[in-house]
Image 1 (tube, rainbow, N blue to C red):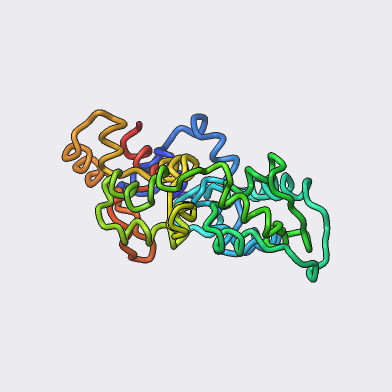
Image 2 (cartoon, rainbow, N blue to C red):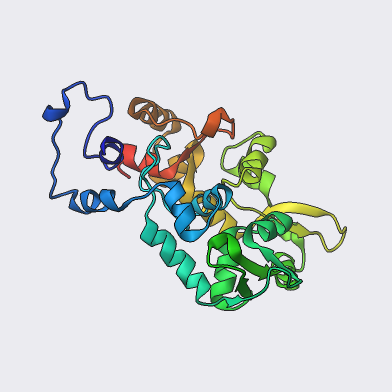
Length: 271
């Protein structure tokens, strides 16, 4: 329970007092206390909604599912009701097909092949722009029409891919100067991007659409974007984050540049 309370600001990390002296307002955090016993592990999530770790990571990266605590050492941190609601909404639009029916592909395959974010494909399903089917009752069992995904990835109403922002330029604009680091962040599935082919040259490149940019800002902040949001100087913000113990986003020690999880920064600075 302690990691939940620390992230919620009810307790302070590193408090040296004995646990029975570390008190907080149960009334103020009643909703959190009521939710904690209902949370489940990834294995329960997998058995209940049929989802893989990779699919879950993509949904989390795009803000479609939210762990109730960021500390990965906490196993029971997933809301089963939130996950079931997402699945039920999609399944309501799906028809059952045979696994051998041609022309269909899983969400993850479609996303990787066309570099489309899950959020864009799910929005397209909800709006009726993408047809969805299922070969079972889990998230991994859902299928999309490959031809429709292709049209979503390369819309005819985009006259010139050069008018869009390339992923590398966007990365530099938010302060991630090493192009390879922002590309690595995309390739690892932590933030979405869109592959489009330049209609003049025929060369494919990775761009960020307005939806991709919004997804990045929902999950991450950099020192540059944080300074712009708060109007405070970067050295001052850097010192505050260091004092609060907010670390650069670096899962498994990987270097994706100097960006931070927005949730951790908001909790630390009370934005």
